[in-house]
Length: 333
Image 1 (cartoon, rainbow, N blue to C red):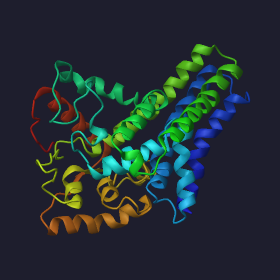
Image 2 (spheres, helix red, strand yellow):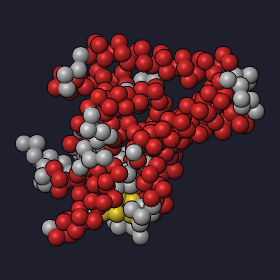
Image 3 (cartoon, helix red, strand yellow):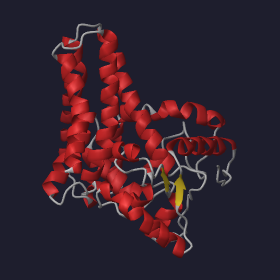
Image 4 (cartoon, rainbow, N blue to C red):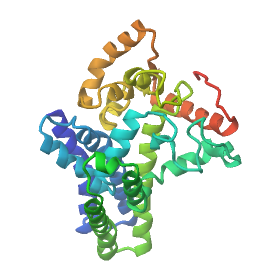
């Protein structure tokens, strides 16, 4: 019931503001902007709290429920198929491993791993990086999904996941057309404001969602306490998978129930990475056991006391990655 209520709340936060604008209930230009911002907040919430669990098979015991709720990423401009490969296969298997984990490989504009080449521009990435996080979902709705599909095909990942690339490409094109038609073309056609204002508000929605997503996902792994291990010549890592997750992952705000509700338990990133097929409503319950077990075996259990501290330490990590070829490992307090 908890997940059902959350699902209804998040979808309502996304759909109702849209309908209020489309049917003409809200006509004031500033109120319309506010509706788009609320939709951006809801976009991130749908990703955190519904789609994420569903695509991990953790939302329900019913596989069909997980399958169809996982497709909710498509109504916010993304691709469920690509996301599952990027997140479930690559990120969860190869967390913080350069060349495999795409979450630490945003291109040359940012350096999120000490193993990436450092450029002069990176010296100020702790300043401009937040703006790039805001562009995250723009990549979904433009080029990223198409580039990923062909890259995954070349890597053999689509074949290993039993995905027909041509069929997926067709579905991807149709999904993008429908998304633009509903969330951009229709508002331009029916809202009684200039088309360029609609475009700006559409951009504001995506920037809001992208910034929120970046501020939740990146402080979980790009932190001063996180490891960025490299495999040996045979492709083996020093630690096994579970231990690897403890060395590369960080929790934050473990005592904030409101934040935990909104981000789908992703403030308990360690528990999520160790048990990705468990619904996030159980993370708080198992966190104490995980922490105690880690301490018993002399393993790290990194946790930031609150969200602000996590953001500050992530910013300091961005700064260090921009200043040093090998960022010094520090525990900022």
